[in-house]
Structures are given as C-alpha cells and as structure tokens.
Length: 237
Image 1 (cartoon, rainbow, N blue to C red):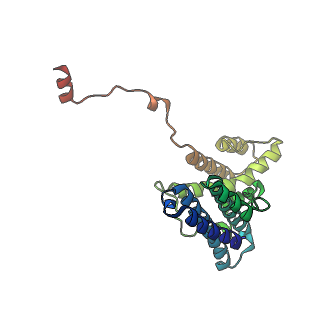
Image 2: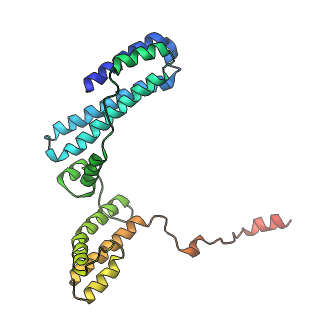
Image 3: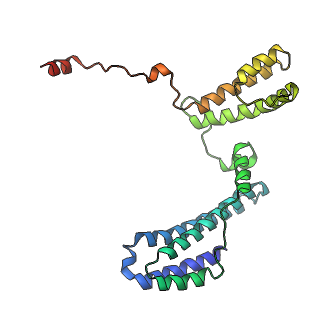
C-alpha cells in the first residue's frame, strides 16, 4: 500500500512540475498537499519501524493498525484534495483515472479500533508504559500530568470496590461522590477502613483532575478597582 502511494506521489510531483512549472511555488495549497502525502507516508513508515524495533509485540497491534490506517487514509485524502483543486482539469481527470481507477481504497480507523486504542491508553500495561517511556509522571503540585496519572491509578484501584458495592446494594451506583459512598458503606459494615480510605482518595484525585478553572461564586464577583493615589489626583484635576 505504501509503495503504491509512493508511486502516486512521484507521478503527481512530476506532472505538477511539468504542468505548473515555476508557478508551483506560488500555488502553496498544491505543494502543501504533496507535502502532506510525503508526511503521512513517513509517519506510517515510522510506526512500522518502531513496531519492528520493539520486537513486534502483539499487544501493540491496535496502535500499529490505527497509526498506519490513519496515515494511509490521510495521504489518500490529500491526493484526492489535490486532484479536486488541480488547476488543469483535463490533466486532473487523467491523473484521477490513473491513480483511482476503481475509486479510493482506504477508510479512516473504525470506532471499534478507536475503542481498542483508547483502552490501551487508559489501562496500565506494558504497552502503555513502553509508549510513554521518558514521560515525567511523578505526582506533584506543579506536574499536572503526574497528578492525572495518579488519579487514574487511584480510580482503577477503587473501581472493584465500587462495583462490589453496586452489586451488594442492588443499584447501578454512579462513579461520583465516592467519599459519601465510603462513609455510608463503612457505617453499614460493607467495607473496611482501608477500602473506605481508597474510595476517598480516588474521589479526591478525580475531582482534582476535572475541576479546571473551578472558582467559588464570590471569586467571580465584580470588585471595584482601587486606583493609586497619584492617578486619583490626576483624574480629579
């Protein structure tokens, strides 16, 4: 597939230069789309190389499939956009017949594949650790990414307790207000103190991660601006 797209890119580049000549430099949308095709082919090659360099781990395949499928789709989309906007319509028609004799070939990654990739990124695993190697994930006040990672681990640790309580209470409990759930469940003897502490910690981490730009109502109230004494004297004059 990549070889076919590479051949198409070579054909488009040669024909564009032959037909447009020096004006190709000024037709930046045309040259940009040629660059887009090259960039997507480079990305697909990089995905395959990394997969090979890291031992072809089967667990990485959803990421590989998503990366290559998206790159091929984007490259073909750039070719299609170029042909739609090519100034010489006769040449554009001939190129379309040569490049897409039976229509386009590639689809964007499916929702099912998106779900597999999202699960890999959200659940700690060897694959997730490998692709995130080198990230600074130490939780601290000044490292939001580290705090987000800590929240993920806390929530995952609390999830089995939450599911067990939902089953014991016969309710589909929402994964919110875990601190209140912990107090009530502890009072009823459904969980022990360690499990209650885990639920409270998960709720604290969860809220810390999602409460972005969270202000109390009085903090948003309009307050009069106090002008410096010198400015007040000038305005009075």
